[in-house]
Every structure is written in C-alpha cells, then in structure tokens.
Amino acid sequence: MFALAVAALVGLGTTWLSLSRGTAFSAVTIGAWTAWPKSGTRDIDPYSRAAISRSGELPIGSGDGVAFYSRADDDGRPLDGRCDLRISGTTPQARFWTVTLYDSQGRLIGNSIERQGFTSQEIVRNADGSFDIVVAPRTRAGNWLPTSGVDHYMLVLRLYDSPVGVATRAAREAPMPSIVQSCP
Image (cartoon, one colour):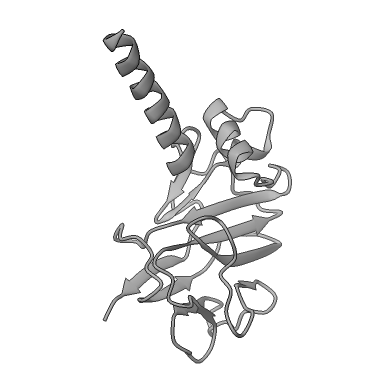
C-alpha cells in the first residue's frame, strides 16, 4: 500500500508540474522566447494538449502564425514588474505581430492607460527599423508598457503569417528581440 501511495503521489505530482509549468516537448526556444508551433495542429503532444485544455487558451493555428512566450529575461531571471525591462531589436519576418503583457496566470494586466501591448503597425521604430519597448512600473517616453508593479509577468510575441515554425531552431534563422531587465 505504501509503494502504491508513493507511486500515485509521484505520478500525479509530476503530471501537475508538467501541466502547470509547461513542457519542452516540441518547443522552439530562441533566446528568452519559447514557442510550441505544433500546439495549433493535429500533431500536438498530449502534455501540451492537456495544458491548453487546462488554461482554456485558443492556440494560433500553424498556418496562421506562432506565439512565443517569455517568463524570463536573456539572463534567465524571472520577469519582475517592479523592475525596468527593455525589449529591443527586430522580429522575424511576419506580416503582422503583437507584443502583449500578461500576469503569471495569463490575464491582461490592468493599468490606468489601458495599454497591455503593441502591434507592428503602431510601434515607434528606430531609424534602422529596430524598436525598443520599455516595460516598467513608472511612466517612460516612447514605447512604454506599464506593469502596475505586479510581482511576476510574462510577455507574448505573436507572429502572424510568418515562416517561423517547427523547422526554426536558431536565432540566425529567426532574429528575436532581446529582453534585458534592470532592477534598482
């Protein structure tokens, strides 16, 4: 009985961890960004299917685009809403893209200016075509997303009508924006 109880606890515990923290099955990681390009297809792995069912998320179909998630900066530190963060660089080729700020539960973060993200059509770009987005609790000039001082959050970069997908494995194939965090 003891062995059965231990086996049940270990099995249920690891299943809960893989569903709540995400799995690396069929994941594409470029820098701090991770995507699951098969999540909108029939070839989705069982753990990803269960995680999507649990969250209620509607994944982007592989023919429509891909969503990249980041819960940490380029150095691997969790994104902290009390710190200043800079997203800079360029995105992979895409007809349209969005960058959106969510809390750790996957909900939009409320703020007084009602801005949770930017699109490729409204972002202010640098002369070379790159962009800088500042994610911070206090007002900043330019492309600024307010965090409202939440403890942890995640960023989602959605690329629509993009060739980025399952075959993409390196930053040279898909240049992703860098994520640099600085805490006071």
